Length: 243
Image 1: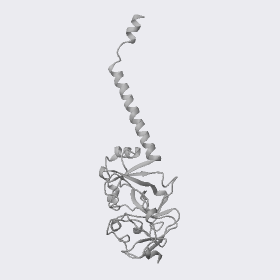
Image 2 (image 1 turned 90 degrees about the vertical axis):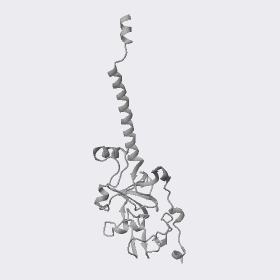
Image 3 (image 1 turned 180 degrees about the horizontal axis):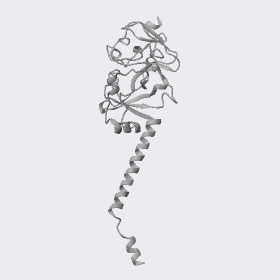
Image 4 (image 1 turned 120 degrees about the vertical axis):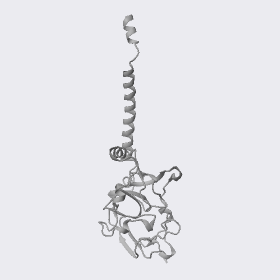
């Protein structure tokens, strides 16, 4: 009995303690990866802003959070900032090659699990201006954008930016069912729906290409803020539209 007691009280070997420690680390790491993947798949995902097309709302290099619930359980709205998969080679070769953070297998794994933001490889960021069934038009280069004959007030544009600048006017388009019309806030430097009239949908993008809706900028820290939707308060007729 005494011999057994002495044997039971013998110290655990260094190798056994090391293996116990490694197992605990692996459990924590795997649990974190699984949780991150689930959050990315069903709730939130982060993205880097690859271009200046959304300035000054979003700057190059900003990191945004996107909710997967819109579109999905929640419907898209006028004014939502959306991230969507490139519908028909909108991105240039340079933009496709551009990336942020680790590249190769490590980068792919980190993006797959949601620990690294997606970059310019296959996604774009624009603002929803037209929903299915809407008629969107620009009548003059220095005039407002009209949605269903209502001139919308776009308070998110930088001072001095004409809403219809960047492409020849006048133009008018009807948004097909299951598509949305998107435009960048930096109207003079945004190859958005206006630049793709020959694509399926006439420049509108399929709703099933939309990954989610941006709701916050989280990096860099001095850009940390929520991205509200201004349309409910600002999509009102102007005297020009009602007169």
